[in-house]
Length: 166
Image (cartoon, rainbow, N blue to C red; front, side):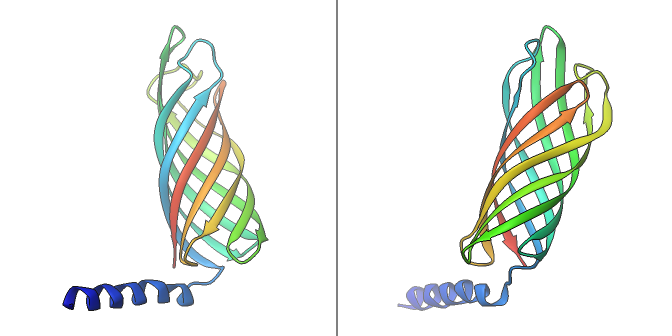
């Protein structure tokens, strides 16, 4: 019985956090990514991960920074193993109370361990689209598709992640 009371109290506290959260404010998130490349001289896909922090000014505009592992690719054109630090603006369209469609545009500073991309580091553009669902108002999930220019190549990155709103 004591465990049942503790579980009920924890559930009540967890669900009440939704009343504290709003459609604006700080958020933290992370997830797994699938990175694909169209270059015929390198392998075509790899799994990696992404961590991000952002701030929603309102349901329509957010600013976000992220660290992304770009994966490892190898092939006859050389090897590629890189990571990226990103800064982007998210332009959202709320659909109901908890669903938000968004487009993103920004820049990313990337670094690669080899020169298959033509350089070992640079600052390039990134853009994408995605959808977010606030599951409990302060806990949500996101799926997004981004294109990252990395020197001479373009990476297509699909991310599935979870985030926590503060």
